[in-house]
Image 1 (cartoon, rainbow, N blue to C red):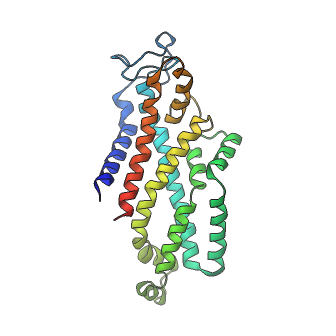
Image 2 (cartoon, rainbow, N blue to C red):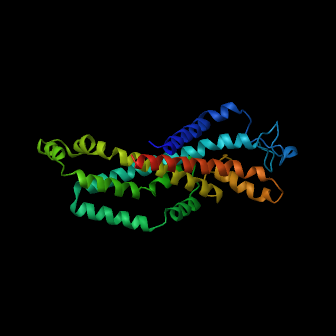
Image 3 (cartoon, rainbow, N blue to C red):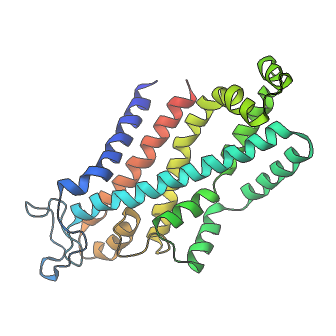
Length: 261
């Protein structure tokens, strides 16, 4: 794996560790309001400053990693799971089933997924898990096309044909003799799905349609920083912005490295 791939992997590991252990390292309450300490610049008491309600920015950043990255990871799992199931069924079955599923995939790809998520979020107030499921359920198409293509290329391979001739059940044949050959492709696609999901979750939260308040999350922190910038509170913008950028960039680096191996 390339140096950037390792950097991406280490970066994601550090971000994941921050999401799990970060709140334990900084016990400050991210929801505690202190109007007398509003918009304080970074200092010893508040290393990243405070927001317009006097809430500690570092605590909110650390606590916000859990719902943001957690929702992104769950959405990626949903997208990869649905895409793998649809792609495997289409590639293995062929014929009419393949045609119908791939045309449905094309139609789904033609509709902007973020628009659909916006519509669902506007109609139904979703928690972190619900938002992740909706984002993932509308992002399965790339994985489906990858798995379908790989399955079609392997469905007539000698070892697959031999297993089928021996009467081995189709799901068992696919899992034992096809899936291992698709593993590198799926491993490269998973970080891409994660990057897209994190960006979508942050964007929805920025627009006020994502994770419900008062849950601290990076997208909402970016939205809250906007009005404070007019008062010179520059320190509110860069921590969540850099956090989202780092998560997406590290995932893309890892995906690029895995795709090249």
